[in-house]
Each structure stands twice: as structure tokens, then as C-alpha cells.
Image (tube, rainbow, N blue to C red):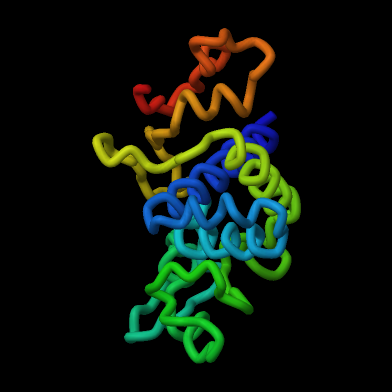
Length: 208
């Protein structure tokens, strides 16, 4: 059950980060026009993983003495924490890519996108493809049904970076009346196109 919960939590964080970053950088409208372009959505989600990794920090233990850049020495058995978020913006990983801008910039067209969001080597995440597929499906399913979806500037996108980059709150706004026409036209009354739509937790409907 521990592994199952971890996968669900990281996938949920991955999805929230994708919506949140696209909203933060004003790209949800463009994403809505690209819902039929799986390649665009995959690149955008991949950039969100690089920019805001679901597992930003990984606890490790030095199995032998190692000297880090700058002369810091770790004796064998020393616990440490690797920050993947920092590595994903390191010039040694994402610099020198002539088809992408600075690693400090959120670039949905970045290709190839070199990051360590899923780890590497024998520790690479076994659920990487599940995360990619799940985030793309979430974008494809939600964007057409939530017109004018955007981050709610009046509320705080509450994030924290630890072993899991979780968010306590990610408030969004959308057009409630238009969403009612999209989601439940047969059930909505003639005077209230949005009557049959229930608002999911974390979303705020724009008043008519």
C-alpha cells in the first residue's frame, strides 16, 4: 500500500504542477487550443516536471567517501539529500541546448528536455510512463470542460518543496455558466445553463 499511495500522490502532484505552471505563466489558453496535440501536451507536462519536480529531493547515503564540487567531503555512511529541482536547472544538464532557452525559463517547447524528475539509472522511476500518460489525459479531459480556467490570483498557490513537492492548495477560476453548457446541457434548466454542474474542491466558479 505504501508504494501505491506514493504513486498516487506523486501523480496527483504531477498533474497539479502541470495545471499550476501553465496557469502561472499564462499558458492555459494556449494549452486548450492544443488538446488534440498529444506531442504539445507531453512537452508542456515534461517541462513542468523539470521546472517543478514531484519528488524534488531524494534522501541518500554515501556508500563510500566522496568529494563534491567545491571540496565538500562526505565520509562513507553520511546521509545527504539530492535536490533534483536544482539539478534540473543546472547548466551542466540543461545548458548548451541550442533549441531551448535558459534552464531558468519555463519553456513548453524545450526539446530535448534533459531532466532528472524520474531519477536515473537503476533508480529510475518505474511509473514514469504512467505519470506521463496520466498528466496528458488530465489536461485533455479537463481543459475543454472548464472554459476560461486560470489560477485564482486572489488566493495563494500553496506549495512546499521536500521529499515530495506537494501543494496544500491550488485554487483555480473558471467560467461556471459556460462549463455548464459543456458538461451537462440536457440537465441544465433554460434559465440556468450551469445548474447541473457541481464545482470540484479547489476550483472557484466565476460568478455569472
